[in-house]
Image (cartoon, rainbow, N blue to C red; front, side, top):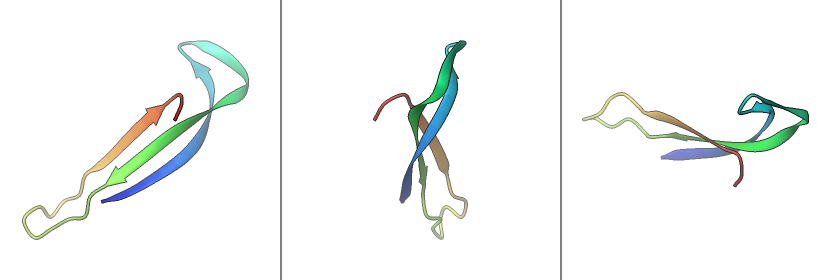
Length: 50
């Protein structure tokens, strides 16, 4: 499994405009294909805080 944490600047949350953006986080997970499961799965997880 591979994982990556990336900070993401968001300009709106719940239809409320945020001046200069707000730092939020996106985690991306991806599995490694195997002989039985040839396709991989990619999961995106966005959160307002760590």
